[in-house]
Length: 195
Image (cartoon, rainbow, N blue to C red; front, side):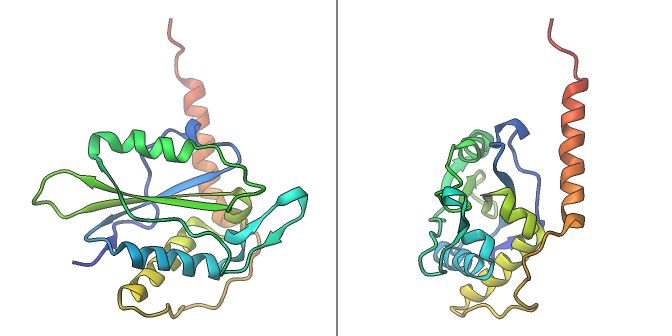
């Protein structure tokens, strides 16, 4: 059975206040059997394709790492139960990093265990900097990752169906995300305080 995304970007089981202020997090939920080496190679393809995912900011000057030197996360799944999933994801997302000197993108895959007869379920959590997300939408990253993964499952390099992106700010791609964030903040503000 092939790994398939059940949605481009799904809501992930963490609270908005656990995401560090200088980071953006999103998740992909998959069903099927995971080819971990292929997923890692696909992530390397993604980093090579999108320059903002390998751009760091030491001492206030942007430095673009080459595709060969940019770090690629280890995506061997961490096995967790469904009950542990929210805590495991929150812990990964909330981990403090120094964005000026570390890779601007990190990821971890989780295999959610449950019924032995059920189709395997995986969650890929991606955390990146606002600088990278300002230039590439989560939907585009997800689409490119799935294109690369489909090719790597066949031991091939990906053939991109669209040209290498020009890295510009696309405000229209962020409006929905920003609207959701503001709505969540307003909803929390309207909650009654405990007595």
